[in-house]
Length: 558
Image (cartoon, rainbow, N blue to C red):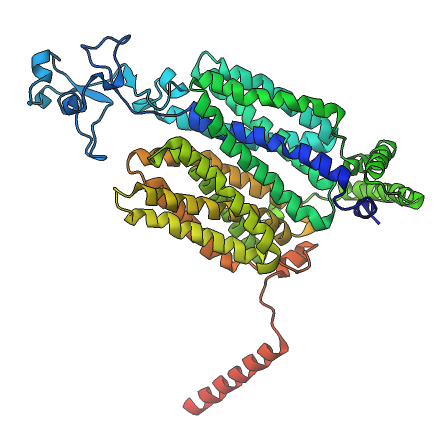
């Protein structure tokens, strides 16, 4: 007997669950706003040095004709383009600029002020604080620290959720997100902005993951795959809507406020969304749990037998006794996953899969500005291709198997991204198409790795394994912004690196055992034996025959 049997009586996905589930999916949209906002908040438009003869108040990016750029800016030997971070140390008279002789012998000076192209972005945090040239790492660092916040938030809010409850944690993170989202918009300097964004990143874990847990805890086992995938689609909708905000709001500070304020709508959830009945039962608060169950039963128009409640009380007491006994024993740690050879090999492969999936997913999501063409259209397509990626999982994951989808998707992503190397420079649409195929495929593999990992680790260390895997994934997300800086050197370079990583991870994942329709390992011993090649009587007999022949052959030779 367990809470799953209560769900069976209520209906695995009844009217009440559908209503609450839909409400809990909506915060994923706002979390997508914050995770993808950096693409526009930290947009780096084309720029050039403000030359000595120009007035900072009146100078515009296009006031210096392109044909005069070679007279002002030296050529970059790496990119083959004008190095707009420096200018020639000459007197920029009208006679000089109308001539055709470059005064390279006078040397160059580093820029102290810049002029930005405002045709695509009115402004951004990059243009306000001049995060270009020698300061270009600052923008990548800001995005990277946002992902550090996501990592910290998964620890902090995960602990709060288990100890204080799902609902208080959800609202604590939501209020924090609203406050620091606004602070980031009015930040007077880079430091305040970055710290605020770091905290907002932490709250996305609290808002999204806690809402996800509440939703999954009230859905029956039959519908969990659908529920887990569908909530990710709401994130993809938020992904695309971010571009809509950026289309209409060109000032980065107002954009940040506009992306933050929709979170206010979820404050009304305090009176609508209940605490998790599972969590309440686990904490012995059975009366509160029974009220929620009764309400769900009333909405679903079903009756819960009285003996169900008695059994739940007995189960809660038994579970509490087991937890007390378990607390007296040494707790499982990540080192248990690394102590045994087969389990260690699988764990390292899984960690690498998480690192690659997260790094490539965010690397491609944040790289849309470097692909060329219309940046907003690129961004929308990058979000839109996630929908078929998730739909693929719904139709194939329980038919083709977890490993097949994981490996196949990463191999497709790797090949499509590596093909950008041979795309001609005048066929930019083909480069974008390859990048989007890669994004679709990596979305599918990222959605698969969650389920695949949970089924690989034994029960006694499953939470530890998932937590460690998630931490490794965040490392990939933390490094992704620096990877995208390489696009300034050669546009396909970030795509090629992402492709090489995806292809490698896809091939290495073939070494992991399939988990579809297999019993989940319970103990460390089960985890060590799962996927290990077993010696059958036939193989033992064959081995002994071969050994016998080898012995006879040796005797004949001697």
